[in-house]
Structures are given as structure tokens and as C-alpha cells.
Image 1 (cartoon, rainbow, N blue to C red):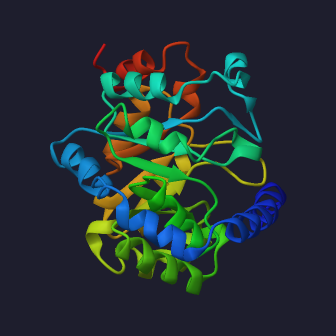
Image 2 (cartoon, one colour):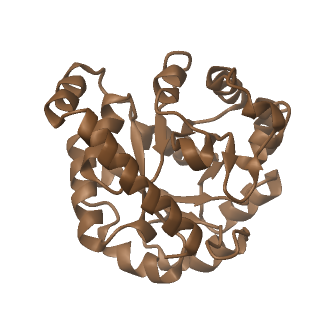
Image 3 (cartoon, rainbow, N blue to C red):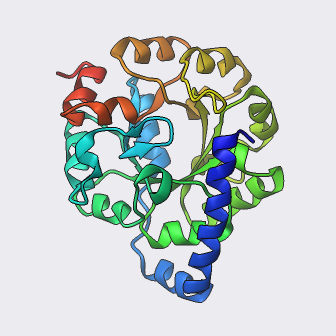
Length: 275
């Protein structure tokens, strides 16, 4: 595991242990039972891509280990995910990804419900999921989908988390960075139910933290069903979307490029050619 990712995962294990000590599983189960049914993240993306358009998962992201604070004003505690969520809705987003890791990304778990309270789009919890307890926590917090990073998980963990995600009616975005991990998870894409699973190829090199859109293009032929494929990171322009579509990729996740803009919604409109 690359050094940066290993440090994040080590901290996350401590964080999850503290959280589990503070909230019992029975309490989480009660919260989930009372929660509103999840919005269908998978269908929201497929509706757009099946119509011949690129479906964009627009990300709310304040900072990252590689970039620091994406904009100076995002450091302020008055940061409003609601404002950005509305801008993304108006800009043409099909779904929203919300960073909830606090230490490394400046996120908050509460952002998920705050976003859902102001827009009708489904929301992905983007965090470092290493324990089934976090899936219950995600659903209790209002998440409609979760990110599972293959580099953080063993194969048996991946299978168990995919099953539990489906039982909780959340879409799982199973993300890989390397060819080796794509080959490792390929048998599990669409498991246990094809309507609950997406495959993400992240274009960021975890050793250098640089991005290269060619990474998706190089690996796309190794994906049997490209209708569930999501290209992530390093996507900045309308031409990037066109290039990915020519390669058969119709769903993308875009965060840092949009969040760097003074007007993220307008940046999304420009990328989609709507402005």
C-alpha cells in the first residue's frame, strides 16, 4: 500500500475504533430502520448514460493530502456544502460525491444529510471504508452509495462489504487504481446484484499523486461491461469527456477541477457544454 494511503488507513482504523466505542451497533441499526429509503444512485447515473450523455458525479471536496486546501475560503468553518450542491444540481450533475473524512480531506459525515436536504440527487459517501460498521454508519447518515477502495481491502473484505452494501440498498462504487487490483476485483463487479455495483478507475497514481487520463483509456479493454465504469480524477474539460466517451466510458467523477473554480456549477456547465 502506498505511504500516503497507508497513513490514512492507519488513522481510519483508530477513528473507527473510537466511533464504535461510542455508538453501539444496535443504535446504528435503529437509526437505519428509521431512515428514509436511499435514493437510487446507480439508476440516476445509468439514466443519463443510457440517454447518450455523460453522467457526472460532482464532488464536494474541501482539501486533499496532495493539494491542501483547494480554495483558501474552504478553510472557514462557515463552508457550506449546500451552496455547492445546489450549484451542481443547476450545472447538470447526475449525482453528488461527498468527502466525509475530516483529518485529511476536511469533510464531515453530517454533510451528506445537509446536501440531501437541499437537492434531490443521490449522494455517495466518499471515505475510507475498512469496516462493515462504517456501512451501517453511512446508511444511518443518509448515504445512498459508498466508495470501496480496493487498495485498502482484502478480497474477502470486498466481497463482504459488497453484500452488506446491497442489503442496505446502497450502491457500491468499487474503485481501483492499478491494473493488478482491477484484475483482482474483476470477478466481483456486479456482485451480489448488478443493479447495485459500479466500477471506478482512479486516474491518480498513489505513489506520485499525479493524474493521467490515459490510465482509464489503457485499462478500459479489461472491463467487460463498460456501462458500469466510472472514470475518476484528472478530468477537466469537455474534450476529456469526449475522449472518454470514445473509449466507451459514460460516467465520470469530477471533484478538484470543479472545486477550484470560483463558481463550481458554472464550471460543470462548461464541461458538459451547457453554458
